[in-house]
Image: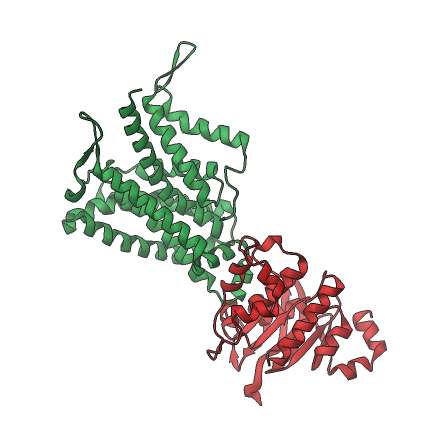
Length: 299
Length: 238
């Protein structure tokens, strides 16, 4: 492969992986801390993308849309936790899956009513619309660099928050012993609401910043949900570190699977079967380490 | 006098699932008091503590904390009212370092007093200072118990509730815990202490409460408890 094309695909893979991480980290946090399997998580990504599209039109600026979208998604997360999710903490996974699957249908229907079923595009904001020349003939969009940088920044922020602040200590403590955490004077209900809203906002934010590089379409939530579950399973349920490693792995495999040519016994394996590559990867990891690459706990 | 009362539990009936554990228990603790709570296993000691802490709200009866009804209050509100809990099995957070275990819940007391700081706690428990960076799961049983007590003190409580204060600890370590509990008592913090060691408990307590099958069968100071060896044998098996 030409080294410049390789570099571009590498950048694409890393950027896609980082974006997946933003969505998957919320999923794994919510599972690791509250023990809730949230199938509706992909819907927040879809809602984020549609918010970016409609708010950019309404407010006339992608940046304003981003700011308003973050606020709205935090409020949405708080509201959902209060209305539905908090009733699931002491229930089994089947009930969690049923309720959150119901939420997928509700969000899909609401999207159809509010925004319709059309595919949309969001323009890259003017400030970041340029490209950086890699060689004389090839260039890479500034927006994609910015997107990756934001994701890295958020990952670092999340690490700092969980590992080095008192809030993070309380969250980790609550994940292992809910009763004791409460008896130390910590309002765990409020803490959980914050964590859930944070997870929702991360997924929605990922959808918002992804909107200018991919199209905004009805099924995008489910597509990302499945990949996020692959990420969370490979990384180890509840592990944020694992989610980061797995997301990058999946991003790279998915990207290169589509461009690498690989022939086995006269049969064109790649890119013909590229769609399967991430699932094959998951199967291999699960055979090797059934508990995922990183263990369950948040450190 | 009533303003001195930290917790007043009245007519507590508590259940674990279908089994009726506490049958109308009255229990009061005042500021500065140390109470030994005794009884054989399964007589309702932990249940009584949990019903006062909001962890297992009683089906009947009331729990007043400083005169206000907190029968069904969330556990964190009871804790914020100045009550710290050292549970059976210790409840340290294995995925947090010793330092994180200590500071995660540290706060000033109800009246804003900040007597117990990290420095003072580490001076009281020098072994924890050497272990600050270790994970909670790397500590010995005795160190874990010290950590739990230290963590409780850092919330600057008015009342410290210890369930099975020295259970499973080597005699020397248990002695050190008792020494520390005596020092805590001298600072004016009230305690409710559950422990199997009758002589150690009665040496520190102002008053003792004995539970048999979810009912209070004795309440009085340590001298009058020791004066009833026959009853002690049937209540506690000692």
